[in-house]
Image (cartoon, rainbow, N blue to C red; front, side, top):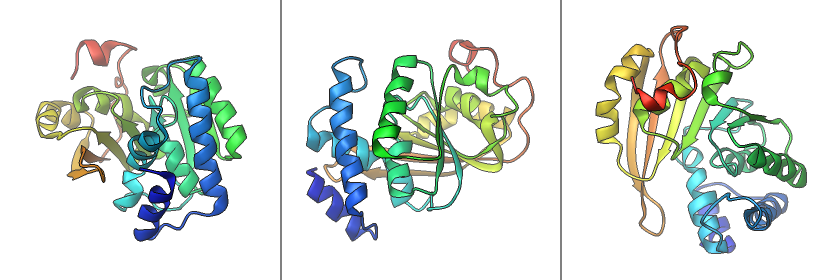
Length: 237
């Protein structure tokens, strides 16, 4: 997907990018490739692939109407190089974005990226999702949590649901159908008082399969969740 095709595809769906936004995406691509030589951010470095498989892929929650340009508090868990939250932030500047990542080198990249792109209302923290979720500054503070190809729903739900306000939503972006995952995650979602609202299969313009799963938090998360760092992975609920 060439940048011009990216702009046109968005315009066809009612999103007209300004010159500033186009420049932000271009600079994002440049910095991603530049920093990727120092630290491993992505295996995808060709411009057309970055625009399709990172930028376009990341904005699925906007294209499918799940996120609007409002002052929502959005948390992105395991965002790596800033996907999916920062492409959405470029398109919808009103979003307040927080990213937690376990690797400090990636946080350094994100800080530089935000400065270069002139992004405000973005916050980057180094650490484990399990630890921050027990902190009152973070727990039950977010309208939306996003996660792109982070973990199976059985594990992901424990890492993300505690951060949501009641009626807040987890938006999980997956590379393939999540039906089996959701069946395995039934117990975890019950324990966390969360419910699947939608599970939508779709394709990228090149035909690659994708799935968007929306989960809503119905009640306060019991204090014992999430368990200590590493436990959700070792012993999924």
